[in-house]
Length: 103
Length: 103
DNA sequence: CATATACATTGATGCTTGTCAATGTGTTTG
DNA sequence: CAAACACATTGACAAGCATCAATGTATATG
Image 1: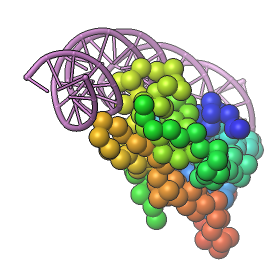
Image 2: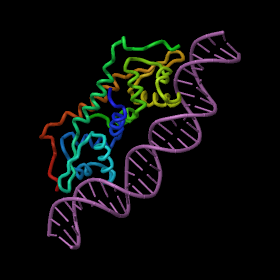
Image 3: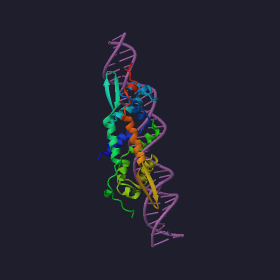
Image 4: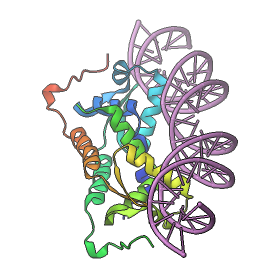
């Protein structure tokens, strides 16, 4: 069984329009913070805040190179989320269903 | 391209430990609210609140039968989330990558 | 070394969210 | 019809969150 606490924090990280926008921008591969910022309508501190949340939840990974921070999608992180949802949709066999009528 | 606004609200709905617990309980199939409540450490109004969020975001569907509300996972809703994540992980081809060095 | 650049951190502010007690609504049952 | 049951709604409150301006830190450059 997976860890609901960790999963909740990953889903929470995904539950923001700006952060989803960031992930879309990273679809093409690694990008540095300044270029992400160029394509968004938020200030630099706000972007930094969002990147921290995405990195802490292991959905994005950062790589420092001189002055620049390069961010990219974390395949492992995204796969964790995918697997969790897959497990949810895999219904357990009927025998395991502890259904009873309601009183 | 998918709707980030709708997706953000779905992820937001998934971003709560109690709500993930509820989804786990629904893995075996439909359950009525009273039985879900039995297995959780929250009050009835709080459960009702969570169920509303899950239904509004189309992750769970409800079915009224007399006094009872029966809830079950929405395959369509969960599939939307899965597809969104799949799209994210499908990297676009390198030619589409508008990468440039940072100034 | 002084300045500029890229990014992070801090502190403040308003909005959102999870929670509960109290109450409301609709349904069943005696 | 009255009481009991299952669930939803309301209102209040504290905690959490997104945002920004101001400031800090580390790196590159003239």
